[in-house]
Length: 296
Ligand SMILES: [Zn+2]
Image 1 (cartoon, rainbow, N blue to C red):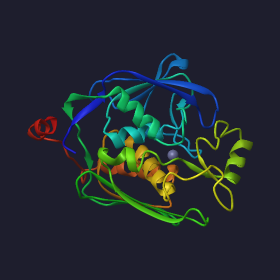
Image 2: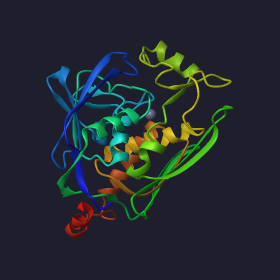
Image 3: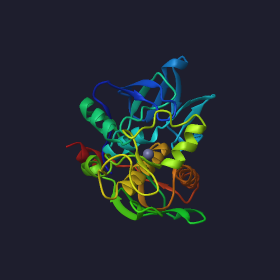
Image 4: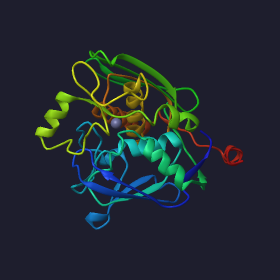
């Protein structure tokens, strides 16, 4: 991961509806200097800034929400996953509503948007986060474990839903911009019809439809063909990468996640952050020499 930090070459915009609010929103992605990270700006709240950091992460109704001073921005994980997957480090996202648009339920529209803008290399190195020890969390049969080692980040995800279309799925993927767009980004969010009905009763999932999620009933899929046979586990990898982006810098090491979800992702990321702040942790920095090589 010895490369220069990046931002967008030019500003780009996208519009769509929020998954929960169902309201139309416009998002403008603007270039930002090195070490800005991702920051959301609520245009409809006097330009209040919400950093894409764990300290702002709040509620999780099948999505990750950030909040500062009582103002929130919801469903940030697909946009952040696309950035982490493609190697986009710094960006200001101005948005005129409470939620990032859900679009087709995957990260592919964000990848296309970033590619349309192009990437600009900045005069600062990416400093990956790396720990020297294991960190793990367990909640019944759900767990996530970090082990040090390897170049960059490798994610293994296992899910097991007692459903004829899903069942047990496992995927190991080394985070690489070269194949994020083909292997991970197109995987759509998924949900079970009965959960959708519960969310609707609570006034949520108003923007959810068969066009922006893989919806399952007890027998099969209501929303047409899958994009991958194992689209479900691929989307879990997508989500985890997006939630880990709240660490603020790319993580190096290996992660094994079993039957986890946003709430556990965030809890685990907080443990990692805590461990990174302790003396046992090590923060790897690219040397200027390596950076020069990466720029060629
Ligand atoms: Zn998702």
